[in-house]
Length: 138
Image (tube, rainbow, N blue to C red; front, side):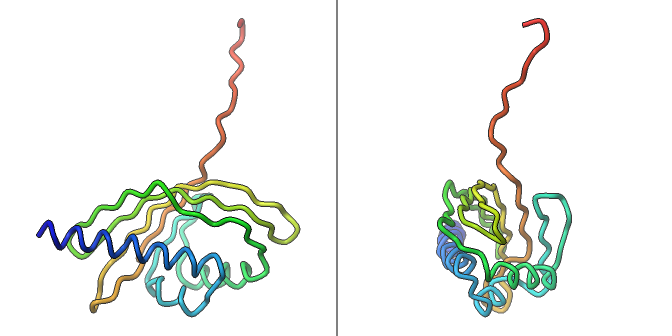
């Protein structure tokens, strides 16, 4: 069982790299395969969206100029035919005249159905830069 668990984890790490490349270059057909029809995504602002809203965002992203789109700091855990991948995503580029430079922490839930892996859930959080706090009386 541990061998299968390790194999699934390695497979998902490979798929996360393929997904990164598809997201970075906005490969619509590849993204359609990676994201399950019943995917549930929690965006950084707290709203939950499905695949139709993801399609809208993919279409908007086609005009973005991406300089950097890197995943690192991976942690991956397999639970049967479900694998959770957590990682840091660093993005730099420009979209609709706005410069973007941000880091995120993402968790993707991959499920194997019919022998194929797909992302069924994603949670994205913004990694905020540390803020100085002024203490009164100091």
